[in-house]
Image (cartoon, rainbow, N blue to C red; front, side):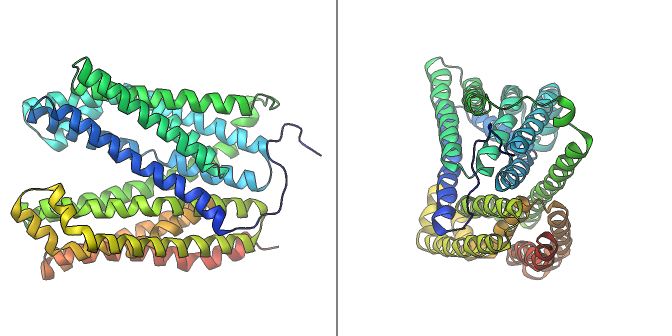
Length: 447
């Protein structure tokens, strides 16, 4: 029976390089706008010539980013479920998935507002800064957490558009969000002289503007959708599936954060110089992640859509193309790292000893791009296919291999050992997921 409220029509599904790039390029561009906004905030607070304010902003941003990254499952989980519904041409299921995710995001965001004093206190305990830095950090965290419902809802909205392969709309919303953040941060922070509070409220304004624009687009799309009962939208089986999916993705995100923190902790155990050098080199890993995130998102949408249509050929081609593009881009990123790595290190830090130490270990950081390709791409595939339990198990197995390797190799080879262990973590994740995929394909497309 034809669904008159359908937004998409049934059509053949063939995975092409053009489709991959149509998703990957906008998401890559959107990813690079986020650190630019962070640099603007730093520049605004830096105008006041107060080192404590600048340190408070940096510490507060770290705490907020850790909290925020814990909820990125809202984007990933929504993308996978919407992509599968899109593949089945099931617009009603797209709507119900979106409704459930928005409800989870709103409730979680309101809970974070209530927990703001506790989150600020934990952040202060972990960072243990001086009194002036603590006051600035506390102010920034409490203001940023006001935007928690909008920020989490924006993750869901972005996940919905990515699930339908509409990455250009996702890019538009990210540019709007970060653009409004930029404008309001300058107006409030510099023009009105609010300083760090202005930067915080500027971020709140950006998140709210992005949310309003996204919800307005969604309202226009689903205006003709037949209303469904809350019992149908939030019935136990569907909510249970979404919560299990999101829970497994959240565990993976927490393990990633844990691996990073443990790596930096052991860097500090070696020496302050090693910690500073590795903190600089981690920018290369983060830059590689920005490069690879677009193709991982393409893998997520195309794999999920293929699962929805039960098209094994499309699924395997999505995996092949996105992995191929991922390795090509990782090679390009490594080339850039070797060609411009030392000047970039010099731009990040002016301390001669830190620059020399970071340059010595630069090859380890540059090669994280090719080492991490399979980890990024296979994670995208598994999130799109909603095989979250396998993804969680491989992540935990990789972490279990990483921890003893970190301590053993550190004892034998110092900082070389730390970086070798991190490469082991990346490679174990990627190869582990790749080894599982053949069995999962057989069961997913059986019959």
